[in-house]
Image (cartoon, rainbow, N blue to C red; front, side, top):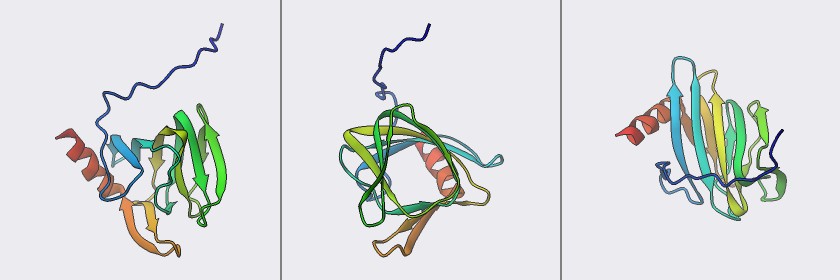
Length: 146
């Protein structure tokens, strides 16, 4: 018989990292298999905040582990809310920003890039100002282990 009990995710043993000067989230790269082209990481979003505008350039699977995962249109309008336990599998998509709900949010990501491209970082006019690619995640994973 299934239990309806709820649990809080204990993240005290995760080595959270910041990404440069970007605000409102921390992350931990859990594994990178460059040969199979799989990147697994977890993100903790701050409560009631949005991160930078970006576009996913690779197939992305997500699982909301805790809190409420919010998606925003490029103009800042709330587009979608994903609650705890929501699993999605989505192809590369449109520009958006993401963030946590009132209590913040923790989301597990499993990315499957066909090439090296994983994310495009965009300015407010949706022009690309940077990228995060497979070699970047290989380096982030290596630096987290040292």
